[in-house]
Image (cartoon, rainbow, N blue to C red; front, side, top):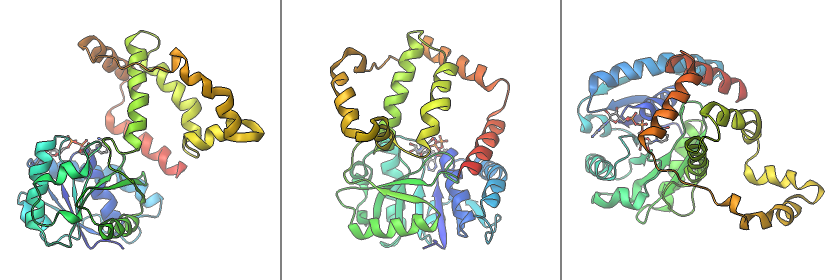
Amino acid sequence: TVPRRVAIVGTGVIGCGWAVRALAAGAEVVAYDTDIETARRRLADTIDIAWPSMEKRGLAARADRQNWRVTDDLDDAVAHADLVQENVPEQLELKQEVLSNIDGATPPDTLIGSSTSGIKPTDLAAGCGHAPERIFVAHPFNPVYLLPLVELVGGDATTPETLDAAQAVYRGLGMRPLVVRREIEGHIADRLMEALWREALHLVNDGVATTEEIDAAVVYGAGLRWSLMGTFLTFHLAGGEQGMRHMLEQFGPALKLPWTKLEAPELTNTLIERVVAGCEHQAAGRSIAELEHRRDAFLTDLL
Ligand code: NAD
C-alpha cells in the first residue's frame, strides 16, 4: 500500500531520508520542523543527492520529485496524512511531547511511526491520550532512501492491526519490515551495532588500533559477508560440514574466556579528539556530501 500523503516531523538526516523514500514511492510529502528554513534547504539538498540513486534503481520512475512542501504548522503537516513519521532528536521528553501533539491532531486511523533508535514504544506513547493504539516504532537505517530494513515495534497500547497496516505501508515504500517481537531498548539492530561500536571505541581508547585500521577490519572481511548473511548463517558455514553444531562445540567454550568480556570505555575528551581526528584523516579532505555520494553509488550497485 503506497500511502497517499506522508508527514515528516523533524527533517534532520533521517527525516530527509524518509522524505526521499516516500517521494520516490509516489507519495506526497509534507514536512514540519521547528527550523523551517534549514528544513527546506536540507530537503532540497537531500533530494538532489539521492535522486540519481533512486532513478538508477528504477524506484522513482513514476514519482514527482517536486511533490513536497515544508510547513511551520504541525497540524497542517499531519492532519491529512496516511502516515506520520516522527524524527525529532533522541530525547524522551521531547518525543513524548511531539507525539502527543501529533496524536491529538490526527484521526485515530492515521499511522504514527517513530524513528527512535533506542526508546521503547510504550515510553514514547506515555503522553498520548487520544489514540495510542496506532503509535509504534519504525526504526530505519541511514540512508533511509536506500537501505530497506525498518524495525517495527509495538508498545503496550499498539494493536496487532496497526502493525499489520504498518507492514503493508512500509512495504509500499519499498522496505523490508522486521516486526520485533518484544520491545527492548535499542530494538534488535542497534543492540548489535552498539556492541561493535563499544568495542571499536575501546580499541581506539587503548591505542590498540586507529579508526582507519578498525574500519579496514570490518570493510575487507566480515562487512562483505554481512551484506549477504548475518552472524548466525555466517557461523553456520564456519562450522564446516556439521555447521553450527560443530561451530558451537569448537568455539562455545571460548565464551568463558577473558577475551570475550568486552570493554565499555569512558567517553573522555581525549578519546573524542582521537576518534574525530581519525575520521578526518580517513575522510582525507572529502566533504560529507562527497562521502555520501560514494556510499550511495556503492550501495546502489550492491542492491
Ligand atoms: P537530527 O539532529 O539530524 O535531526 C533532528 C531534527 O529535528 C532537526 O532538523 C531539528 O530541527 C528537528 N526538531 C527539533 N525539535 C523539533 C520539534 N519539536 N518538532 C519538529 N522538529 C524538531 O537527528 P537524526 O539523526 O535525523 O535523528 C532523528 C531520529 O532518528 C532520532 O530519534 C534517532 O534516534 C533516529 N535515527 C537516527 C539514525 C541516524 O543514523 N542518524 C538512524 C536511525 C534512526
